[in-house]
Length: 114
Image (cartoon, rainbow, N blue to C red; front, top):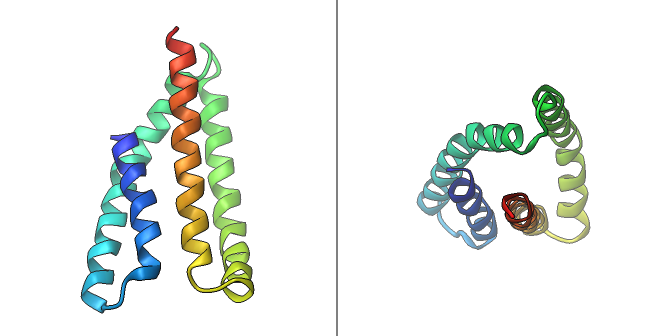
């Protein structure tokens, strides 16, 4: 569920700047909400499973802290991107960052399974 949810979120965020109607925006927002609802628990489980034995708590704590930092600074950075580059910039940056995270996790898992 993690990879599917994050993939849908990355694609959905890339679509947001191109939406031109309220109905389409509602559909994309619903897909994003469902994607994150499915991805979040799976993401935490993945972080725990990739952590070394006995370090799961630290890994989950670090992940929660990173999310908190994102919630604090994301709107500030997004606002600057919106005003400095344009309305599409925050959405596209988030989409690219999610795609990069998917790639990183995929490579990490492949290396661990070898």
